[in-house]
Amino acid sequence: MNNVHANVQKWSASSRLFHWISALLLLITWAMMFLYTNSDSRLYIDLHKAFGISLLCWMIARVINRIITRAPPPVPMPKWQQILSQLSHFGLYALLIAMPMAGLLMSVYGGRPVDIFGLFEIPVFVTPDRSAARFYNDLHTDIIWPLIIAFTLVHISAALYHQFIRKDNLISRMK
Ligand code: HEM
Ligand code: HEM
Image (tube, rainbow, N blue to C red; front, side, top):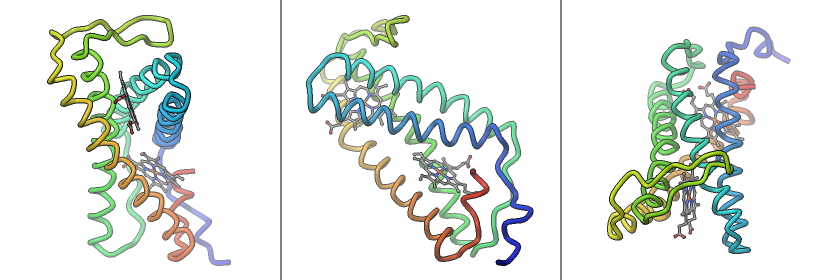
């Protein structure tokens, strides 16, 4: 064994927490939509929205955390890979913020307030407009969602490439 396991420069504890809870919230939000499409129960669409809004809040806090905490220096890799990695991370941040915003706008332009776990409601804060609702619906389901899938697959493939091909122990920076 070489000594790459020693002195791994980890992400801060807060960054690691933000990373894994974001991934979990994304999974739960998707799972609620999956259950909804297979059962048509209102409960699941309400939970889809509430977890999606939770992810939005979490991502806003995550961006603030990213600005105020220091990222570890990148592991050695060619410059182009470093640039692609930064672009893809920026893309993931942007997509995970745009997705719930589009969902929220779709709902309120459709004239539907958003129930947050039965605790409170986000009221209809715009004048309902069918064509705006349709626009945000298309954005949500046909544009941003496929991009999230693509970026996430690339992201996880890159992590596996580092783990099993480069063997540079990158994943332990985020563990
Ligand atoms: C990052 C958070 C979110 C993710 C990943 C997500 C993902 C999805 C996905 C995969 C679909 C199904 C698309 C399809 O029909 O194939 C969907 C539909 C939907 N989402 Fe979200 N969503 C998120 C946040 C939200 C939020 C915050 C709201 C509302 C407040 C919302 C409202 C809806 C609604 C109403 C539909 C059904 C649209 C329809 O029936 O055509 N979503 N979402
Ligand atoms: C099995 C799943 C996952 C693994 C193994 C993984 C692994 C990693 C690793 C190792 C890093 C740090 C890269 C570095 O140090 O340069 C990272 C960063 C990141 N990951 Fe993941 N990840 C996973 C899932 C996800 C998901 C589902 C998302 C969101 C859709 C995500 C979003 C991000 C973002 C935005 C960063 C950049 C962090 C920053 O710059 O603040 N990850 N991930």
